[in-house]
Amino acid sequence: MTARHGIEMPPLRSMVGRISGQVVEATLIPAAIFWGMLHLTGLVSALFAGLAWCYLMIARRWVKGGALPAVLLVAALLFTTRTGVALAFHSTFVYLLTPTINAFVLAVAFVGSAVVGRPLTARFARDFVGLPTHVTALVKVHRALRNLCVVWAVVNVVNGWVALQLLVANHYDAVMLARSVLTPALTSVAVLCCVLMGRRALRQEGIHLHLRWRDPAT
Picture 1 (tube, rainbow, N blue to C red):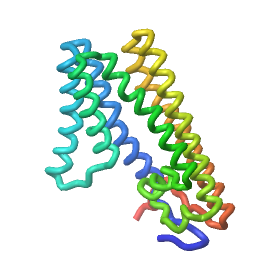
Picture 2 (cartoon, rainbow, N blue to C red):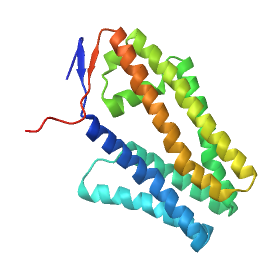
Picture 3 (tube, helix red, strand yellow):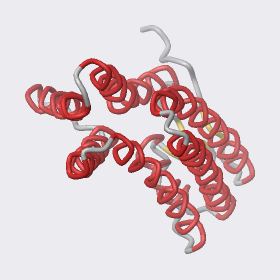
Picture 4 (cartoon, rainbow, N blue to C red):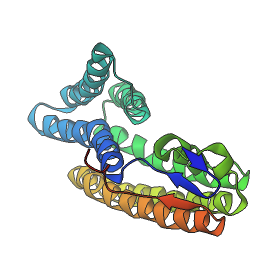
């Protein structure tokens, strides 16, 4: 799998497809369900509809014996928390405010992990990309991972700030639209930074990253 001079990565086509599918399934679809039901039937039905989607996807994977993606589990947990808080206050504002606060909390977590020398991006690199621990511990790679924490912190701050401004102005539809468009756009920029900065750091350490779009036909 790995050597000091090179790392063989999974095909980009399958990697991008897998990650994109998980993001759509765990975030975009339940958000769209919530937004649609909110206008059709009201807040309570919208809350339970979005939450039901997340648990339905978990149940489907459990029945089929498939692995549960971490992003789906986290989304279900956050959706459950947000639903509980929103039902307690019976407020759309509170429901939309919760993920906005989470964005700022995540930004602090990213920066804090970089400051203490245990960047969260190192965990992501191991979980999603498959970089081994001895590679993420290399000096230049570790430095790049700490810098990438700042990138992800900025992404979360921008996301949270835009949503907060729209919430204060009572533009609830705009908040949902911004999250559906702005969040994937900013995430794509951050992922591109991860690829470029990570690849550069690996090359500086004398490691070549073997990337390919798909496996050769057999």
